[in-house]
Amino acid sequence: MSAIQKNVESASEQYSSTFTQGHLALPPAKKYLVLTCMDARIDPARAFGIELGDAHVIRNAGASAIDALRSIVISEQLLGTNEIILVKHTGCGMLTFENEDAYGVVEKNLGAEAVAELKAKNLDFLPFPKLEEAVEKDVEFLKASKLVPESVTISGWVYEVETGKTRRVV
Amino acid sequence: MSAIQKNVESASEQYSSTFTQGHLALPPAKKYLVLTCMDARIDPARAFGIELGDAHVIRNAGASAIDALRSIVISEQLLGTNEIILVKHTGCGMLTFENEDAYGVVEKNLGAEAVAELKAKNLDFLPFPKLEEAVEKDVEFLKASKLVPESVTISGWVYEVETGKTRRVV
Image 1: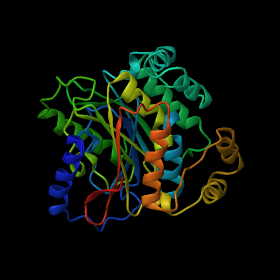
Image 2: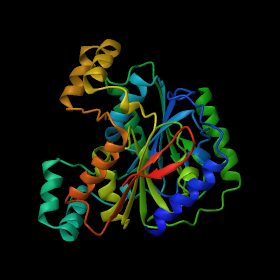
Image 3: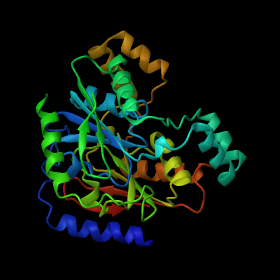
Image 4: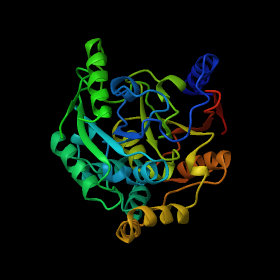
């Protein structure tokens, strides 16, 4: 067992020993979802004030709305959420490369077969050059999608990894 | 401003007022990533023992490895992680429907144009009928992918929403 796996086991033992929230229902109690980045420096529950059971939390590289669409449709259409809090962040890795750079790294590290798999899946890494603009574009994408009805409230935010602050953009 | 948005602002004010971790680096310090479900009943940081700055956390509907592949490749190839902790959970919404059910709900709630958008994007909701089997299949998918080198350690787990426990499957 790896050190990381051991850590999961010991954390679980500790967490479950005082766990009292086994009664929570499947649909989010406060009917909203948070979409943010996978970045290691973000703790959504504490930074954005999410109580256990209240909201879906979707995380991917860059908090991409395009990448999250499957989960968003499930959250809204099958589990009744009607508000989206979209949070990108300062210092995001997605600001630092373009698709061809990532394809180049994959080719160098993993070889031609891996690049062929990327191409077969038509994989777009969805990097973005400007932070605030990317927040606006993702909110626009969601508002334009027929899969997100007008009744859904959508706002776009930036979390500052330097200060721990979250500020609204749109 | 909605009540949810107000809650983000007040939580942020509180969190940032005592924030002391603005120095953390972009790459995860412990070089691992956790892939889990967007479910509102999961707090990965506490349940799985993730300290701020240590690991990427990817979350989508059902903790789908297929859906997460873009983020996983970025995490490993561009940000140096080399271990995956994949955690699905009891009581998952993805156990309760099939693709045609979800397509039917979208058609009923949002109409034919929305279904056309689903079809144009070739959107698979990726539900699964059996929990442990789905964990095994996703681990196999990652091990078979040329985009995940053999040097990456992968384990599959189940989080129990009833008890707060996380147990290893594979």
